[in-house]
Image (cartoon, rainbow, N blue to C red; front, side):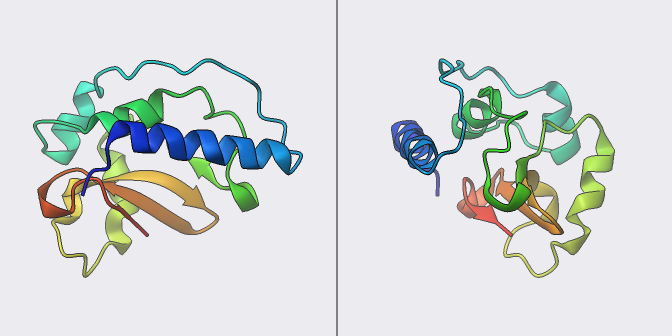
Amino acid sequence: MLDDLDVLRDAVRRYRDAAAAAGFDWPDQPEAPAGPAPEQVHRIFAVDHVAEQLTWLTAQPWHDLEALPDGGSMEPWPPGADALDYLSMSVGTPFPWREQLPLFRFDRLLYTFVLAGEHEGEIWG
């Protein structure tokens, strides 16, 4: 279920404050506006819309930061259909495997954002 965008903004703000308090060097950058998802996302994942929460999250300027623990990183928008290769481990999910977009990576673990259906907005790993 999708959270309100203000809930996501507040969670990110609290995470950034906690990281800074722990000594992490997180540059004070202004929030970037959410834009539309690239057309290839609609084509590759066969969805007619992409949640604003996801477009806002991917628009933020922290992709080059090591902002996640243990070397975790955010995945960029997929450049092509090879993004589906990463979903081969998504067996047994209660939604079509093609309705999830790679979002975070921690070593060998990949977390995905569910793009459609009753699980839209959930993050699965």
